[in-house]
Length: 155
Image (cartoon, rainbow, N blue to C red):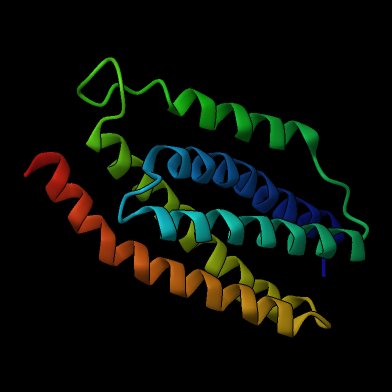
């Protein structure tokens, strides 16, 4: 195992989760009381659990969190909010589609990352297997809800 590359890999995932936590929080706030709310709330909670797992893995392998990467990811998520989705005020149904697409991408990368880490980091298989299951479940549910969101936005 190459320690510097492992540190980069783990910090990249921490940055991704930083953006994911922010995106999920925004999506939860905008979709409370809708059919999307329960899934989004669970994804937000799962991202927090994933971040705790990643932090534990980083500590176990003496990897220091990269504040710059996390800051850039946080800022990137905030800048992503500036995209106009067919209306200047209020929440657009297109915003929901963009949020679901973003969450789908993040969950997909994380699922693959947990599987890869299971192969290269001995001693954490149960936690990594649980994280993979969370990612698969969330990805399946996101895939099932996205067509509805697109229909609502453009149909």
